[in-house]
Image (cartoon, rainbow over all chains, first blue to last red; front, side, top):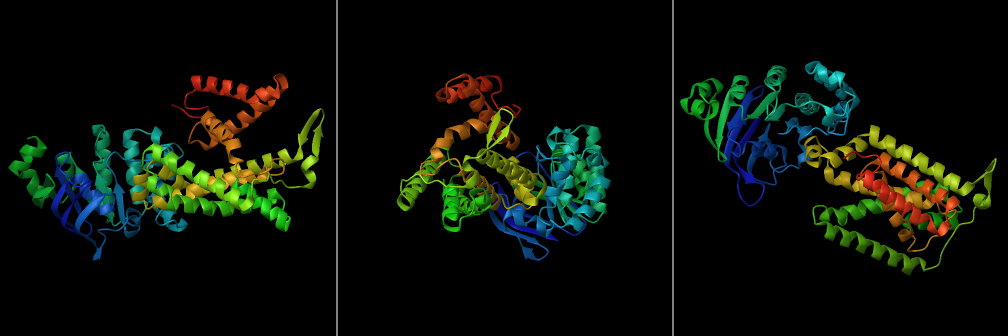
Length: 234
Length: 243
């Protein structure tokens, strides 16, 4: 459904990405693992249209979206959960979720999406009138994921969803990703926590200095000695 | 200034009361603001503060002098029936034109509050103010939202100018009479806070009125600024804003 070819670009004149090629089939969970500064976040930002300089091809369901403005992307069915969560701190949880449906703005669709999010994260229902900035890190992550689901995406971009969270909360996020994928949404997961990423994804790409150096099934990557040494710490 | 001229003309040509004409002033100046943001201010959003000040002060000079060319330097005022009337509540006299202006301000504040709290554009404005990149990621066109927000801001200023026309006369430089007070109001309440601006406005008005009971009236701004500085010492971010 998503096909990225020969993607280069960055924030200034200096390229962070060098000819990246990635593809995602419908219903798949794919992960990109790699060290800090390898360019993982830049790939997601390029897809969503917020990377300042992009060269190459990004095709969603046969439609080139490479240079579409960022605010037109959610309506095409791509939800983005950015690194660092980026909840709107001085808005209620519910208003944050409403913002996720901004591109649809139709009552009927929104209430069913909202129901789905509250079913996935019952804790958000309890806290829906609280300011998002007052929540714990894990709860904010739920808000960020819930908000991205509000546009009924076909593809969910997840950037470091486990970063800075307590291990027990990481498990919850892990469960949520599996549930989201089981409901038919494709997931592109970017993680430093490679063991988590490879346990939820079916395929993975290893990114080094803006280049894909390895791609395989998650199973094969988990047993690959290079990956084990460099990213799994075994 | 533009809002005041707008209702002055609707009053002098169509005999529309300035307070009833004020929504019209809001609408006209909203579009003026939208265009100014789109074609001028948009380009300096990320520029240093000095560039932003040069542009906005420059725009002010241009607008004032255009008004001077078109309208002349005469002070223009309206004549409405309630201008000299007041309501007597025991020993208190309330001027009707002040009362109507106050009520109109309350209504527009309520409308603004409702817009920001419950509408899509209101949520979008708050989202862009808090995290513009994230707002783009959920589908908000941040540039357009800035245009609308700026239009709202100057439209509301025009509305404010319109409703005080029954007791203030308009001239091209009338704006400067209010700019220092206006800064006092928003900084006192807390920059960026709508509730703070409302609170700041009421506090400034009450301090000015009460100080003239005790001190000579020409000292009212002196008293105001002493209290203003004292408040900022205790609450540097304003009355209603947490650090």
